[in-house]
Image (cartoon, rainbow, N blue to C red; front, side, top):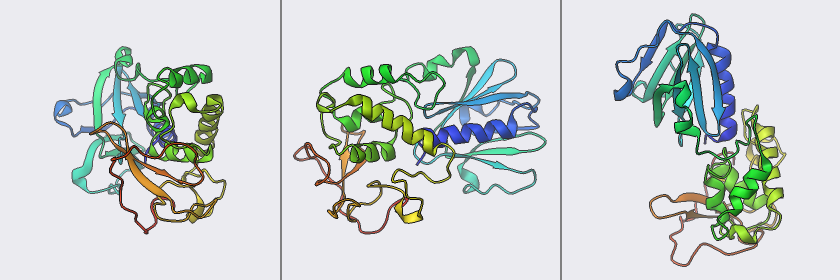
Length: 281
């Protein structure tokens, strides 16, 4: 699942493949960009901003994309058939003489003036992997709504940018607190922010996301994707429930024994236990 570390790595790969070279092919397969042709323009750089990708192109333009839940960019050599999914899932093809970048299942793809980038990323909180990271500001934003549940606050990119469902669940487990704990009750929010920064920095250059410090394929994560399987600390089955406002629920994994604090609200529908392994075991 794309989170801040995935986006950082994707930006690096796009930059290494395309920057400094003129585009020899430009195919943007979304209706509002169907007539746009960037051929001949040089890609200046690609930078990450939280979960957003900003590809800056000669002429003061920025191609803004977001990976959503399952989007991706794949880099390929010329003449190679795209291998990131079915052809109908391709949303963008950008090629230089040496490399081709193919964007799959991109829920956001838009072209804007580089001077207008703030209209799409200006709302974001401090970027965990950005050059302007500000831990104190991230803590201040988290505590600005003290009654909000920790899980919801962590997913709000206006607080700190780069955390998704995986890190939300893993951080709460590692700190031994319930994702439904009010932010005001969190002991030491500075520790949470520091741990989030540490995890994303450690994983930004890895192909596999690891929070347990165990590189074996089935030992990467503590709770995420492990519903019904034994907690790695205490053996209690890991639970899964929806969290968030109606219509915006996101999956949350937790151990009811290891993580102190309130359970999901009464009446909140929870997913049924599944015994099959999830992502990363």
